[in-house]
Image 1 (tube, rainbow, N blue to C red):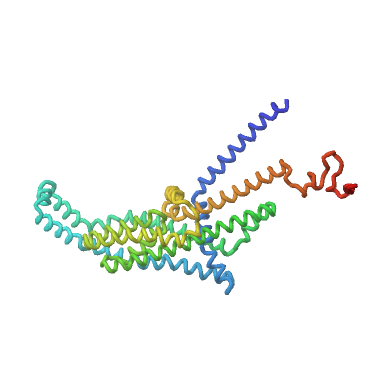
Image 2: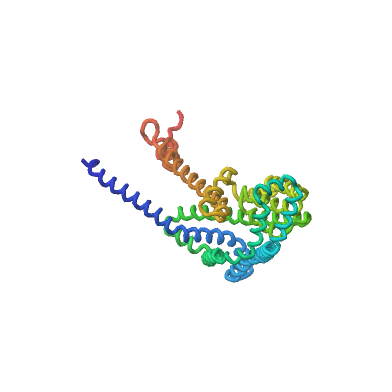
Length: 389
């Protein structure tokens, strides 16, 4: 009767477990925004913890944290100063010169027989001229769109400030909050988990430092090539190349295509061909020389795993998810490897106990146990063997 009584209890436990899991998943989904902010803050904290620790040897930790975060804030400020003014000037020039561009297109069409026939059939130039004349007036109609854009920018700034503050608290407290959580468990497990977390932190920090260095190299060389080719907006495009270079596998290709489109309108085909050759050659050098030297010791994730991680991260969190995909995958790989090693140790220990392989430590067996006849053998030292006659 005892097994029959345990059936309702088993069903109840299983039902409660399912409800708890569903509740936790639903709560995580509702709090996905703050949780994603906390995860990003954690990665930022891990990334800056290395420089903070090195600077802490020569100054108080608070001063080191302040200096590092001032440097972190200077990066987007410098990027904005490089990118935004040229884009604003280009947009203003486009609005002012749109009618002139339309006239040039009209003259070009009239000089080409095929295009002139298409224009006679579809009035392409007339439509283009009308749209160009209306473009300055339509700038004022963009107020509602700019309002929505402003709201989005405010929300993004709020999220960025929140993430920054969270990361400051995480870095400022050091490992105290992690050690406090781990001290709840047994010392043996706490030491193992601390070791795994240290490996994850080292991998994430090394990857981020390597990715930033790799992106800086790509952006600098791209700026030099575009300057030689006379490509307009070389500095903003170089920043774009560097930022896209942070996205594994696909970022460099996307940036190269964007710059290639710009060269088409600047000096086709010379600049386009030269840039295409440069982009292909540099990506091969980056994949075979630069990236292995920088990232080989940071993470050991298979290229297929990197691609899957980038796809999943990009689908979940957009560009931020794609940027964090590889360090997250590396951390998961380290965690799974540590869990598997722990499990194998448990299996080996259980096998040793089951087969009695403890030998002298357990006191079993002929060396220190009973002899073949069941009496104490010579291994116990109580009854020495008789001397030969």
